[in-house]
Length: 73
Image (tube, rainbow, N blue to C red; front, side, top):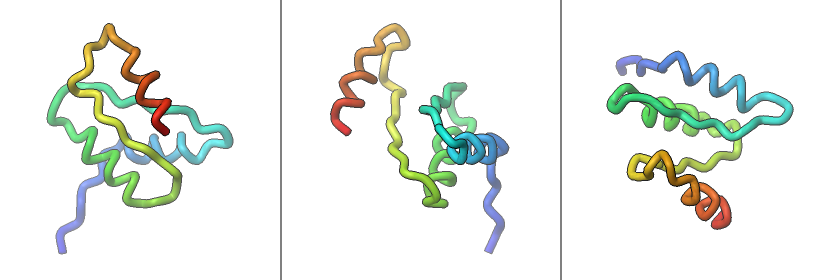
């Protein structure tokens, strides 16, 4: 079975989630560079409670979606 490439930022996120008081983490960057794949690799480890939200269709200037979204959880 081929080894799955793990993006370097996945280890950084794991360290941040392992902190005593982990903060919300936001990944932003160009399309098709592996952000979603990396986050899914991290979530598959199952070491931390998590929730994934995709903001691809959200305008950068409109932050209200985040507040509305957070109230559903």
